[in-house]
Image 1 (tube, rainbow, N blue to C red):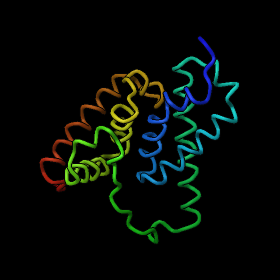
Image 2: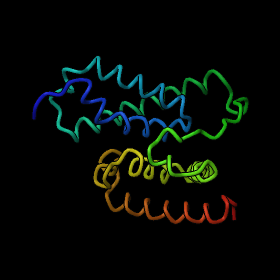
Image 3: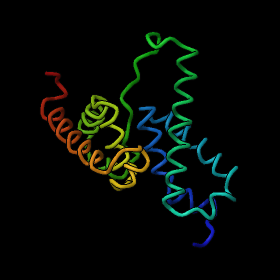
Image 4: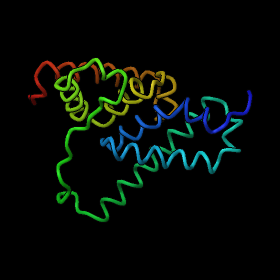
Length: 171
């Protein structure tokens, strides 16, 4: 495998890193900041990363992203009590090519529905659809079987459909 430079790593994985960060932080601005921090780490460890296989690099990037985001959330919780946090507005996901075809109301409904999903389902959906990972890659990254990933994806789709049809009403 030829060595890759920073630009090629960024071009190939920036979207995956952003969506992994967004899946944890649920805020566009914070996800962008986290993504920048991940790629600062990439620059720092570039020699080590240049020769990694794609699966290894993807796994390393995902773990670094999630760990940075979780560390940031823990730091925030220490600084501010959770009930003192202001309500975050719905993020504008219109910067994504897929979202360009969706009207604002549909984007907002989808965003709300994703936020309603339990964390394990939301993470699976984000990794598959937004980070474009295959089920086997998600299984490896999350430490569960591929069957569990498929089951979670199926349940997530059912819940999303129900939430979207029901206007995100609770039963």
